[in-house]
Every structure is written in structure tokens, then in C-alpha cells.
Length: 106
Image (cartoon, rainbow, N blue to C red):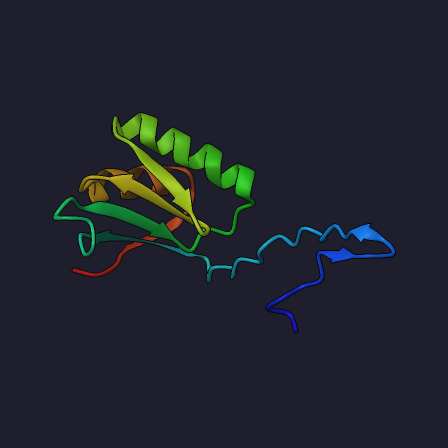
């Protein structure tokens, strides 16, 4: 029944659905930076996970990292994606901000 919610009733009219914000899993206090190229036509990104930040704080941090690295990126599903292989630079930037950082993957 949850797959097909009621959107209109004859006696009431249009039924507005309450917007439910997705709950992101909290990290374990360790920020992980990994490089991904799969499904991106050979163009790699650095994926930053494990940040216990709100959505606005995450967007601000992503904007600062993109500016400092001089490249593009985005925030998707509570993870920051930075274009290119900038793992070492991202690690030093995040460590200066006080995060415990690990390089994950190969």
C-alpha cells in the first residue's frame, strides 16, 4: 500500500503528501577518501564518505574543497564527489580541518 499512496479523494480533493527527508547513516568518525572510475567512462572522481554533517554544512564543505582543488564536483546521497584524482590534497585539507582521514580503496 505504501508503493501507491492516495493522491486524490472525491469528497476531499487533492491530498498533499508530507515531504519526508531521507535519513542518512551517520559515519564512524573516520572520513574515507576513495577513487572511483567505474561507470564514469574512465574519468575518475574522489568520493568522500563518513562525514557527520548536515546537508547545508556538507554543501559548504564541498564548495570549499572544490575551490581549493580547482576542480568541479557535487554532493550526492551524503557523499562529496570531487572530479579528478586529488586524494592527497583532499587528505591534507580535511586533516587541517580536524577530521581523521583514511585513504580507502586502491
